[in-house]
Amino acid sequence: MGPEPMTPLVRRFPALERHPRASLGRFPTPVQEMYALAPGLWFKREDLTAEPLGGNKVRALEFLLGGVRFGERVVTVGAAGSTHVLATVVYARQLGARPIVYRWRQEMNDAARLVSERITRESGSNRIERGVIGAYARAFAARLSGAHWVPAGGSAPLGVLGQVNAALELSEQVRDRLLPRPDRVVVPLGTGGTVAGLALGFAIANLETEVIGVRVVPRVVANLARVQRLMVRTSRLIERLTHAPFPRTRPTAIRIAHAFYGGAYGRSTTEGADASRRCAARTGLAIDPTYGAKALAAALAEHEKRNGTTLFWLSFDARWLQPDRDVGISPDVVALT
Image 1 (cartoon, rainbow, N blue to C red):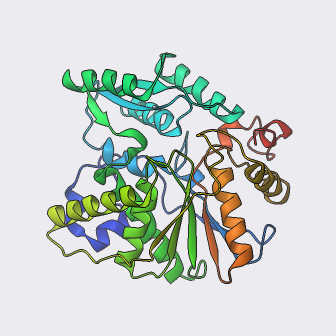
Image 2: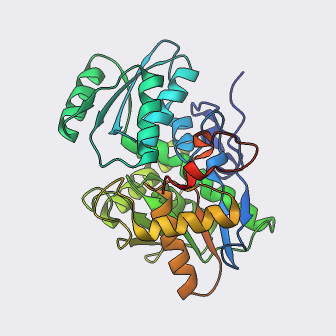
């Protein structure tokens, strides 16, 4: 039995229904008003995309793993505590494929260590390369021998389609009055796929919402030019697959926030830790220090100085880090920040 249609995207571009897609997630993900944190602040609960592991990477993997066959090797790369690597391993195995991962060292926090340990358990490999080049070289060799390639972060045009769908999904939730139209959506910016897809999706839906990407990786990876190139490549892919014209995005559709990075991928920041503790105390939601805490700190800062509605894109699933998922978070999880 094939996957259910990804309805918002397919409704806009019916030809995409023919494209291979793995059925991994449960959509739409809910939106939640966070009045306890700040009036006018909302969360998009991307942490609830799937079981046994949610997060924003599931949307990209539905497309990137869509054509994978049982027993096929799937190779990807990422940092030692990469949630993309973890999600790829989990869902490649769920589809009956054989995941191969190559990772490089990063500055570790407690949450990243737990992610890294789970990657090791799920993949059976604990090897960490000395640098990015070594990991990519080994992955390239695997690709030459026939392994199915999943790009770092899932940030290739095919994977970005999943994030375009997320934006269209949100526009339908606005249409159905489940939340006000956000003036801004604040999301962690790593390899750029989520930011690119949201901006494209909002353009398709004619939703005048600014996407603020909060940089959590070095500037050479996360920058506006790279995001814009990814948007162009994705729009061309949609046009090629559907033969439908694609709307142009507004020049002010995306803004990159660099001030919350903290100097290293995975390095906790004071602002992020404060935002996480505040969120845990008032909402019961744990926020990871690598991605979410920095983006939440930026969202709160933006919301305090600007009028309107702010939507925070909760992209990391912290539920599996919690010892008892039915009674809320534990002090140990709050301490991760």
